[in-house]
Every structure is written in structure tokens, then in C-alpha cells.
Image 1 (spheres, rainbow, N blue to C red):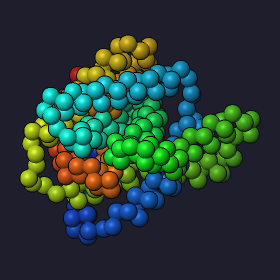
Image 2: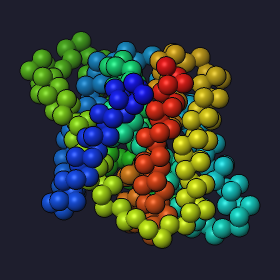
Image 3: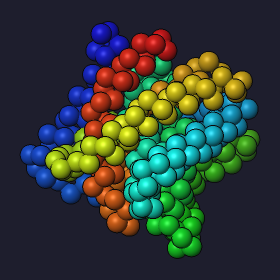
Length: 298
């Protein structure tokens, strides 16, 4: 119960504030999320990569992400083949189960659970997942040659991608980032996590409840909240990971479906109702599953 009160509940309350504000004022989320994506998130990423000690653990993080994504895609393909669903359903299920909300849900949970050291790992993993989601997410939302072209463009449109490059370049130079400039980055970075948490609450308020395909939703819940962290745990046993990083990766893999992926499903008409319903239900159930997982991991 302490884990829920000290780690999960504070995060949920911020989401709930965003949810209530959206229901009350019906705010246009796009301008707010644009500021978060193009100004705030790059500052957080720049600060994290500039101050972090980059070592072999980050290579293991990339390997972990690739293996987890591959495993989740295989599970979805097997389920679709057994149930004989059309390719569009496969795309929708992959979108809602292979990509987790490691940013505006996972990062704050890990910050409360494991402190700033774990948070630095979480932000690095969030950037990696954003790149994967922008590439493979767009690809599965818009299959075919156009999907690949859109996916490549999506990755290079990500400000966080360039923030990583700038941080590593400045880290390699003897001069580095001037202190006053870094202070500006630091101030904006501090506001990023609460802002994206409120945005998630606002996004959840827009998802319509009702007429769910419960068979597919149930599969999505099992795949995202149970199969994904189980596979993540197995992968961490195979890699020589730092114990803290291993916990961060397992907890991140147990996050609900990424809210951002709903936009791709809507934009490319890739089972948007199914994707949004799995996103909503996994977010609600994750309150329990994450609390239990954090108790198990310690």
C-alpha cells in the first residue's frame, strides 16, 4: 500500500488534474503538446544526455528495446494468425501493444520509485522509444512503401533526436555548454514532466468509452501489461545490465499503451477505436499492475 501512496498515487493525481481540466474547459491540446514536444522535451533530453555518463549500458538498452519490440510483434502476429483477423486488425493491435507510454507515464513513475538516477535512465529509454515509435509506429499505421518513407521523415522531425546529437557534441567539446545557457535549459527541463503528465490526462479525457471489442481489448491488456514486462524480465537476465537499469526497463515495459499512438491510428485509419480503447483500459488497469510490479521489484 505504501508503494501505491508514495509512487503511483502522486502521478495519478496529476493525470486526474489534466483529465478534469479537459472535461471542464475542453482545451485544444495541440498547442500545448506542440510546446511540450518542440521546446520542453528537447531541453529535458539535452540536459539528461549532457550530464549523464554514457557507457556500455546504453548499448544494452538499445539491444533490449529491439528484442522487446520483436517479441511483441511476433506475439501479435501469432494471435492474429490464430484468430484469422485481417491485416488492419494486426496493425491496430501492434500499435496498441508494442509501444508503451514510457514518457509522460513511465518517467514520472520511475522518478518517484527510483530517484534521479533511475530517472536519467528512464529519459534515455524514453528518447529511444520515441524514435522506435515514430518509425515503426508510423510504419504499422501506414503500411507499405509510403509507410517507410513517412516513418523515416517522422524520426527526423523529432526535436529530441537533435537534442541528443547536440548534447553528445557539446559533451565531447572541452568548452561545453555555457553555464547561463545551461541554466535556461535546466529551468525548462524541470517543467517538462509535470506538463506532459497533465497532457496525458487531457488526452485520456478525449477517449470515448463504450462499445469495445472486449476480446481484442483483453488480448491487448494481457500483451501490454503482463506479457511485455515478463519478456522484459527474461531479456534483462540475458544482458549484463546495471541492476537499477534492469528495474527501470522492466517497469517501463509494464507501462500502458502509448497515448501518442492513438493519433497515428486516427491519422491513418488503422483501427483507431480499438487502439484508443486498449490505451484507455491498459491505463486504468496499470494502476494495479504497476503497484504490484513495483512491490515485487522493490
